[in-house]
Image (cartoon, rainbow, N blue to C red):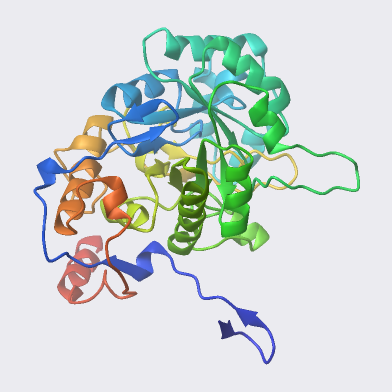
Length: 385
């Protein structure tokens, strides 16, 4: 415990940039590494989830990610379920001037969600044999979760900036996560959370997976607007501790997904070392040529009608989904060939499986990225000129 004033204590928390993974005394061939993980009865070859953002996932992207061995999450409250043809609104978002984009988003997201489009988008994924995972917010979950289950969704995600199993309101409105999960037979992943107690409560409520992270995403402004959040290394480690205790107590293992702040291979490896079973990729996949955002990326809270907590950022379209996931990498910044980066990191750390990776040594290393790299920085500055 540290102190920010004479009597006000504060716990030190760490981001991925402040930690590093120590090589093991015994290493493993990267090709012998098993990257698979499970949610309920569904097993995935890659620990990568495509974020439930309109700039990242549409039915076509969901199918491609599933075919690659990962899992994509389609936002059932986004552009795809409000417009018969999402092309025009997506082009308007991409073309909007920076000082107009929030207003454009707010206007476009006022279009009502249509039940028939919810069904159609899910069926478009399911009919190809791909795994369909869809996301809803707690407020709309009572209506949309059963609809999604009826349409054939394999996995459901209950997501908001922060989700708890206990919400108090003098207005008499409350949503029970436990009740929502019990209404459907399909596994329900829940988030987001950042603390041990909150994670344990969601596990006790029956969550099939936990999303961890408040505000670390590239397009999220929650930390600036609300001042709320916990650095991801600590947030993931705390949630993983709850997961492990819950597993010890009940025998049920629930995967933890690090959601936000994952941009390069090193972030992926650190997130899993901190206890995550998989990572959610937003801006990293918004760069894919196949992504629907047309080189732009924005979060689910960006179109909020009263208090936007996100922004549209330009990420470009410099690579295909294949390159980002499997290479060959054409850049040296770690944003491409995430699969091989993770395999190599796990091999160096002596981890054959995702759960082995949870046990590797972590050190506090805030200068890891800059130590001995003066010439790299000088070269980049020169190129910038």
